[in-house]
Image 1 (cartoon, rainbow, N blue to C red):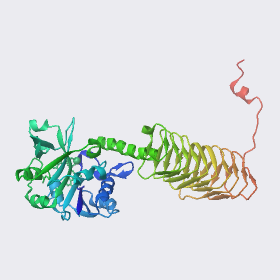
Image 2: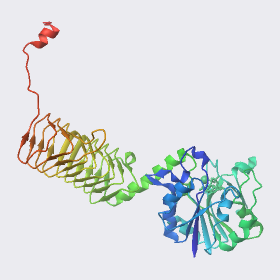
Image 3: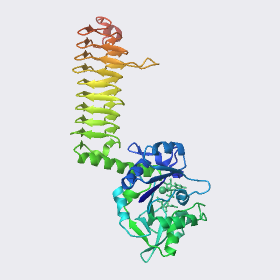
Image 4: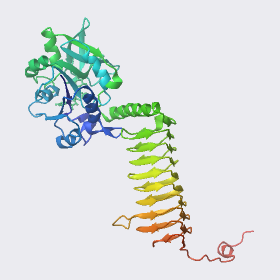
Length: 427
Ligand code: UD1
Ligand code: CA
């Protein structure tokens, strides 16, 4: 049986953040979740080691069928200390880091094909700064030296420990109790096992892995780079599935959005936690937690959570929140919040649903084939039945019955030659 242990107890000091490192998100999803999901593709025996911000991280991790173990950071700090408390159940044990969100199960499967006591991962980097260096002699790995313990010559080694290992059970059982904390950081280094195993003539194999998948996230700069890679993967997947994207590098699609049928996304759009079905999202629109079907949105529209739009046209500078629109046209400059609007209704430019009275939020219900003139305010709670006309500039604070006209307008007064009396005549 294969066991995966994910290390995620560290402080992540280099992130300079109040939030635990592994809770930082790529495309809206916490890093640790990606690592867990890939691990669960390999085995159903997954242990996650936590400590820093234990409760908060646990809340996310416990959504998955994994074991959670709390590291004794005070007595056993370090990556070796993290593994110390985990019951070793598998014949082979993968150690992964919670801060490697780009890792993919397919790549890890390659480790399983190699017959060795330890399979470790190595990357050759132009800038190895921050990583443990892998000391290689005559093509064989000798040991891993952490940056803080390295000599000047060792610091020049371009081969670094990527931090993923596959151990035979016996190896961990034998060497974990032998780790010491006599080093620059007074931590128990998992990496010390390599040297001990080499000295005992065990077989240590090294796989050269690609930086893109194995790069650890240690700073907010790393985080941004990793997010770019993850977002690219997500977009490429949807494009392969038939979604058209214009200048995809400018589009943000999160890990929780999905597309059905032929969809088209304009440049500069942001789409989060949404389902888009056979629709066109035009440039610079922001869509969050919405379901959009057979509709055209934007450019420059904002669709906020709990919105459902079907057969609808939304134009520029229209904001929709928690509203159900079916067969509606709202072409320009509107706020439609907490509303339900039915087929054939035209929402004029500048229409506002006044859903908030400073204390509570209320609903606006609009029936079929309603014509709302420009610059109208609908003061919720209010119901407008089918076939109603609302004159431009009206303030609607009463329910309106089917077939009626609603008009609230101060009479227009025209004062002849007032302009010239005020400014005078120049010519
Ligand atoms: C570690 C390796 C280093 C390697 C690098 C690759 C050691 C001693 N060093 O260094 O050789 O190049 O990863 O990314 O292993 N963690 C715990 N408990 C702890 C300390 C860390 O669970 O007490 C977890 C962290 O949450 C993190 C992972 O282990 O997910 C790695 O820890 P980190 O501090 O980032 O190790 P590095 O210094 O990067
Ligand atoms: Ca790291």
